[in-house]
Image 1: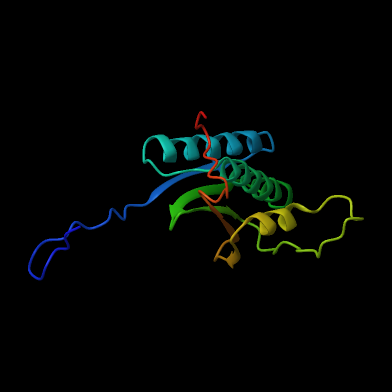
Image 2: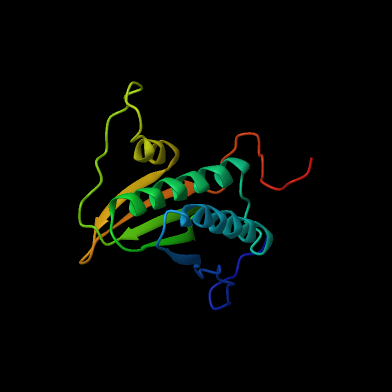
Length: 157
């Protein structure tokens, strides 16, 4: 392998952002949000050549479903879903217009319901809630290729 010396040009890595966004207004749109996530990850793999594990495919759809469900359930008006690839992970962000921060409960197997954020935090490498001038944005990151066995979505063995 030859390295470029001083004064020689080096090929820089493509740092363009790979992302998709969509607004959702009804509870029936939760399935459409999951479909958008699945389509986005399929394109990431097919078009951009980035590996996407079967686990990541499922976990991103779970995170999207939980965050969009919460936004539709607890905030008036539409929500905005943004998926971005950054540093080998998908950043799943959902903005809504409510200024009320979500309640995050400790694990309680006896509690019925309200485990959504608990699940999101368990499968994500990072989780953040940002207050915005109007509303809030919740962001969680899921690593694209993390299966120990190298299981990549869509790969035929």
